[in-house]
Amino acid sequence: MRMEILNILSNPTKTPPWMTSSNSFFNSTTICKYKFISKYDVSVFSSLSSLSKSNPSSKLSHMPTNSSNPGIFPTGYGCSWMQEKSMYETNANNGRKHGPLYSVFPTTPAEVSSVQDLFDFICAGPLMSKLGLTKETVTESIDKWIAYGSYLSRLFQLNELRLTIPQKARFYHYYIPVFFWCEDQISQHRSTYKDGEEIPPLVIGFSAPQGCGKTTLVFALNHLFNVTGRKTATISIDDFYLTAEGQAKLREENPGNALLELRGNAGSHDLSFSIETLTAITKLTKEGTKMKLPRYDKSAYKGKGDRADPSTWPEVEGPLMAVLFEGWMLGFKPLPAELVKRVDPQLETVNKNLEAYYDAWDKFIKAWIVIKIKDPSCVYEWRLQAELAMRAEGKPGMSDEEIKDFVSRYLPAYNAYLPTLYSEGPNGSDPNRILVIEIDEERNPF
Image 1 (cartoon, rainbow, N blue to C red):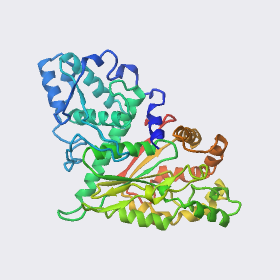
Image 2 (cartoon, rainbow, N blue to C red):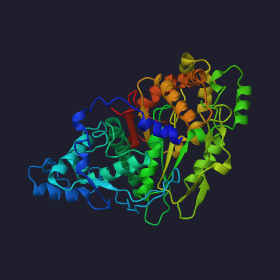
Image 3 (cartoon, rainbow, N blue to C red):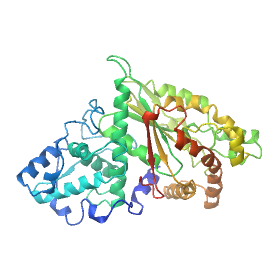
Image 4 (cartoon, helix red, strand yellow):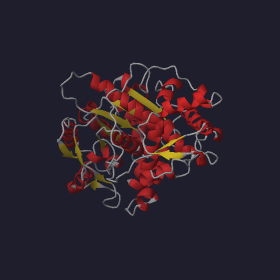
């Protein structure tokens, strides 16, 4: 998992089409002008504003400053419940301890222009208008953008002063804006409860095809929540797959159906176990409440997979603010039998199985992020990259031919259910609580 996640960030990718080298932040000509300061919780923007006033020719003096809303979103989207936490954190994803995280801070008028470069870079992001972000909201929250970029650089073991444009785009155009959206959704969720009431964690669903980067996105968001003092938990539909024994039984019960021969499609999950787990995790509302989260080992049985030994499951402790629940088929809706049979006759049984999935998964999800792709054929290349990363970790995986065969068993479901997911939204979802993010072949939003 760790190698797979780092692979997505460190592999060379194409520069997003909306970016050019002129928007580069922390380029080779500005690196030497920076020095580190030891406290992030100083208001970066306040200091920058003072610098710009002392130097009217600075680009920063032209940044908009007329917004009065203290949050990242326009008025009405405040995140007042957000709390500061110590800068000395333990990463809940891997137990690695971080020392104080330092922010880059300009100290002369000449250096301010590089913060302006970051400001321009952020404002050029493709999610700005979709999320209701403006130059004013970015201006007043620039200290958060800088701090979160620093946190993510450390998480992915990257030098924040030497990020490539694709890496910067992944942070400032994708992960950080989505994090702000999640904060807003949690704020809305918590506002519906009265003082003194127990507030269950908000379950945010991430529906996205395999290999498109959803696990890495969730990994990054979970880290940002942790380092800013909010407890969250992550779970995947993979963690609810049948055991190897259960999968063998499913195969025997559906002879000749290639879609149910291996894990993946509806019918290959332990739905009772799903309900039990999701019900328990949403009850982690108090200090001291704990539970272990199930995990699935995809490398077991030469890549066919099995549920991991419970002794290896991570423990999570309440009170939780959110549960980040991700999966390739979250939100899929059953379709009329005649429609799915046109896609693939074998899909009829899968479609029937899908009827039980709303109560097992989707009804727990109150906010949705749907990552939209143009062509499901991308999944094969993305899956291949994931398997290569798993092999690099020393874990056994599938051969290239086995990967091709494996992905082919998912494509009928993609072809049948993605159009409805994209046009109508996830099963049972609130249209006002869905964020749809379109990505290209390089996994960049556009």
